[in-house]
Each structure stands twice: as structure tokens, then as C-alpha cells.
Image (cartoon, rainbow, N blue to C red; front, side, top):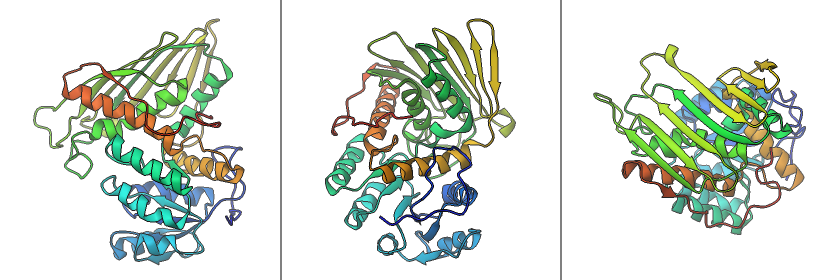
Length: 362
């Protein structure tokens, strides 16, 4: 693979690669415009081409790109065949995503894909196995792992500052009470939006739950077709660990949006918000850090650079497709539980090869 050195250093971490693959962007919707473009512009990532469902939206995105002129392609196949594209970044909606991935496998280029790979674990597993058989690396854009305060928390956990984690609680207030393609999906709160938070529990603990129980409801008068609030409980084997997640997705004002993570260990307690990570030690010491940057665009840039680093080193990225399937299995089990009014549902091990060296690598 030919890779090229960007003009600017990576602002989100010294571990980022110094020579990055040139990107072809498939999709020119909201996440591409408001997330990927500013992320790649800030990091000096060599974005070289774009395509979308309509040529107009692709041209509009190309016009908004502040770097060198983007080549606008009519189809994803045409973009994949472009010799200047080293890596394909897929930002299209989940419906039809597996079929799109399958159509791009013959080109042999690494794929960075928005989550989820598909709306069902069965479909996502099938396309992951097809990609593995074709030798095509896939990384899934689980970018909350690299939101600046979450990076700080992960550093503390990895260094052993919290000791053994015994409890995690996430309480999140957001606002998506609207009719859109994503809130029209009945399991959106689990399979799409909430997937970030389920994934983060796996990321921080390095553990997979064996069962989940969830409840979700439609709020009176809501516009969205999907439920807009859930509570999820996770059951783990091995050392004791209690974990729960609560999401209320109908806050009436952006001023009410809030994200609170409470992580309690045998040596210290941590509290993480959108902006700040705070550690309270057993000796009474408090350490508070407000790192530079935001979840978007910094997390999106870091998901790309982590993939580029892994490709350069010929190893699995931490957010490879097989790892993503284990998060998706949790989400699907939670959605199933919610439809059964909170029945405990076992989380099945994904039907893919066992985890390899580099998996869960922070």
C-alpha cells in the first residue's frame, strides 16, 4: 500500500501514524459533513475523493473541503477503483451497508466503516467473515473510545490507578425526538446511538458481559418511532462487576444535554463528563483534567489514525470488525430484552475467529 505523509501532525495523540493512507469518502451526509470533514481537515489527513447517493451532495462536500480539490466519483465502485485511494471511509446509513461492503471487497482496500456494520448481528457477522476470507481489513468507527476525557480515563485504568473496577454507571441525557431515518428504526437506541456506550464499557474493562437486561419505553407524545429512553443492566462472569446504562433521549433543550460516567474501583473513583475527567483516590487526592478537544471531531480523527497505525504495523486495529461484533451482540441482546420487558438475555459469542493479538489494545 502506498501511504503519504500529511502536512500537519496529529493533534489527538503522539502515537498517531506519521504516514497516512489517502482516503476516499463514501457518503456525504450529516456525519461526513460535520464529523469527518473537520476531523480530517484538523489532522491534515489526505482526503482525495468522495462519492454519494447524489452527485450534488458529493460536489457540495467537495466544495466544503479546505484541502486540495477532491475528485468526485459517481459510484462507490468508481471511487474504489481510483488508484489514488488507499483506504475507503464508509459513512452511509446502516441499511444496505453490508451489501455496499461486499461490493467493495474485490478491490482489496481497507475499509473504515461507521457503526453498526449492519442492523443485525447475523448480517454483520456474515459480512465480517466475507471480509476476513477476502483479506480485507475492516475497522469500525467506535470513536467515543477516543473522546478526549475518555482517553484520560482509559489511561488511568490501564495504569492501574483505579485498581480493579467494581462498578460502572452511565447516565446520559440527549435530544433526538424527531422523525428521521435513524429514529424510524425500532432498535435505534440500542443498535445505533447506545452502541457507543455499550462499547465503551467493553473498552474500559476489557470484559464482555454474559447477559443483559433492559427496559425501554415510548414517551407520551413523542415524534420518533423508536423508544427514547432505556435502562440496561449488564451481568459479567469472573470478578464482581456491576454495570448499568441509562439514556434519556428527549431532553427539551440542548442546555439539558449531559453525559456522566461513574467508574469505581478498589483504589479510586472516577467521574467523566463531556469535557472533564476527575479521579478521587483512596488517600483523598483529587485529580481533574480537562483535555483539549471534543468527541467530534477528535474521536473520529483518532479512529482513523488508530486504523492507519495498525495497517502500517500489519496488525489488527483495536476497533476491528470482530471486536465490533461483540459490542453489537450486547446491543442486540439488550434490544431483545427490552421487547421482553426486561428478561435477562444471554449475550452470544460472535461466530467469528477468536480474538487475536492486539485485540482490546488501548
